[in-house]
Length: 317
Image 1 (cartoon, helix red, strand yellow):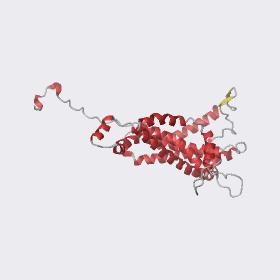
Image 2 (cartoon, one colour):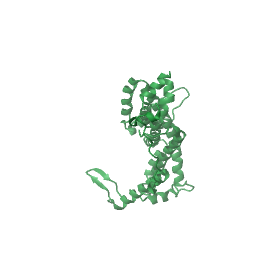
Image 3 (tube, one colour):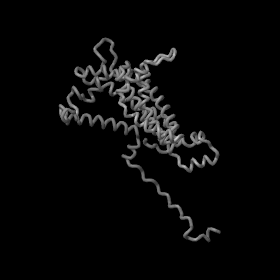
Image 4 (cartoon, helix red, strand yellow):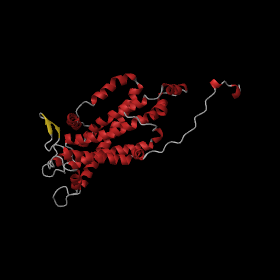
């Protein structure tokens, strides 16, 4: 049948003419610039800090015995510029003492190495659990509730136990080091988002795509490599960033709980003794921990650029 004899009711409608997209406004272009958004977020936090210090009650506000709002005195809440200025001064009055920012940087580097090991272990454990739960439904039904339940255990209570158990390990010439306990605790926080996010990604392909590969004779391994893993990338990348931040938090908290020297956690404890005589000083390692978390998340973002061919849309886990 020729095109002329096709009834009008069944004729394919012509595509509407394409219209040029409206130029993006200046606020929209600014919101797309991620570095500008990041800088604006930091400035907003600084502004909120200074605004509360200016308007908040000097002695804070308590409801019974529970303090709801913190004090705004210079002793409890120094100005942000005072903290930044203190970073350029020596750590102490001793001769040859390092500049404060350099001491914080060295502590951050030590914590970063431990956090990196913990993140790597957490990613591997989370990925193995996700693949196992996707492969066997019984494993998902049995393990997934335990994975969720594991995150309810207080980290500050778990850290001394891990250190005690690790110190009792004897495997020939292998000697358990204190930093290994901190890495295990960091991996404990890092594996959870990876396991949940990757499981969701592995289960995301449509049934029709799975059946298509099955019709081609592809086994479970080929389907995993060619379909499920690429489909899991948009779910996995946000989980990896969250795992990196969790690894930093776990490392700092575990260093505080176990007393591991050299890292940010121990530095926070040491500098807390100067809260009365040098109020801006204890905030320096806290600022270092914040920057360390941002650096860890940024490195994972660089990893995402290598996988951008699979990053159609990232899905928050």
